[in-house]
Length: 368
Image (cartoon, rainbow, N blue to C red):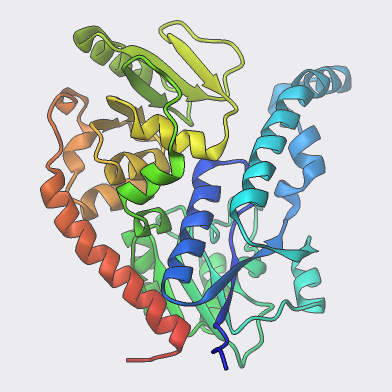
């Protein structure tokens, strides 16, 4: 009789229209399958990821009258529909998402999805600023006491918690059997709560560069190019990219949500599928980014890259650059120096092994 595979239910931000969020979901599923278990994404869709919000929400800062709000909403609707289509097509093709949909913590507690192991992570599932509160679903509050609860490379997205947040988080995390975090600052937060946590790799690193190249499998721009992947307004990224492009006769390609091509950009690639994000990094001659996953994929695919720190949530970038001894990539004058990927791969190999061993341990229930 064939042995039944251990079932692992993952709660993460799979419905986010963000490349890193969906790609880390995909990578974690693949890593769990590699250790001989069966993974499924729990289809939890909090308010900010609901279809109605993704199609119609307009931030109050963007309008000063109801009329302007509706004009912005109508003008952006075709673009939002395209984004929704491309991300949801990816989810259907690549992620094993559970059939039952849960829109609130109460939904999960009323009709608890059944798995052998419950897992939260990765990415910023524990960042209270997204909902303006602690979302207990991402802390597995709904999971039964008798079933294993695991955090894989979960992130707070910031370096500290308020006293009120810390008290609530400690209560929720005390129910976990195994905890790991993605940032050194996250480990410090949990240690200060009197709990133990391992400091592990983002799931995208659990697949190596060759696996990601096979996954992306398509060159989208024929010319040689420097890629700009930017999440925050900052002219410095394009300034660096244009300097590199001029010196090496490269095109400047921006992978973005810009409807109109900006000055200094040769090719604007907007609203693309997540696998195209990987392809654009894999085939770039150089990357300039302020994104954690833009950085992570640049490293995993052995690219020349420069990081410009964002104004918020920079702990995650500091953590990965420090862990892999790549702090020099923060200095834009270093852009023409090849990173020492022989040394990086030695560290990555050890960290990957440590991360996989953690998954094996928590899925089997081995406390050693």
